[in-house]
Image (tube, rainbow, N blue to C red; front, side, top):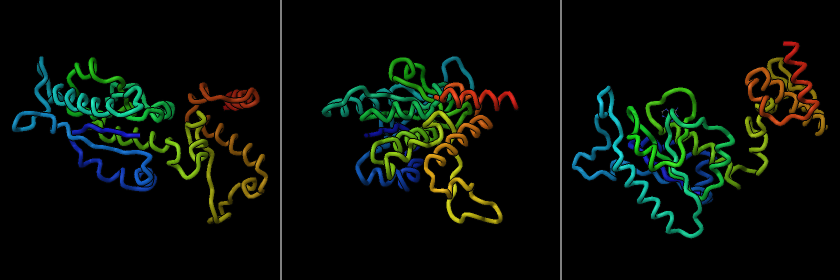
Length: 249
Ligand code: ADE
């Protein structure tokens, strides 16, 4: 997968993609990330990327021309390559649809992504209307720009690419992958400061362990994110358990 990120602050991307799982994915050529400075697509001597809002009001608005030019230049480069299908052009903005594991999974299927980081008071509406194909928010709060949101989306997508995690099963049990929060994990020592690892995990009985983990996932989700249970795929027995626990609460 090749990911292009358009930003006014390329220097922000220096740390996160050079560590751990991400660096390994880059080294193994499973993903390429290219950072493009929006200012490189301006034509005046001050490299102006923003301007005052028509109609007045505080704050600056990102101008449409450099963003259109940057995206169009990348698009023609990408679409010249072989076997390129649909090309999502995604704007990171608090006005977008809420990002989720499911959307991460959708995005992981594309060969290329273009992400645009918004800034200031916003972006000229013509970018929303005539350039981007998708708008994503990472949560109901306002960041000072789309960069951190882009890093979040890229991280969540890259770890879903085949071969990126040590084994293909590693992402299967993740919180949200099943529609539930993940069960508790333990490692050695079996007892620490008087706190013991649950007996069942030491039993070697794989079906009992799987059953315990599933129950823990359901309980934890019920406690912390009960709204997720409405959409989670549960067996009829598990549904009954949830209804009973809800009744008791
Ligand atoms: N830019 C500013 N806030 C944002 C958010 N919550 N999600 C995505 N992009 C943003």
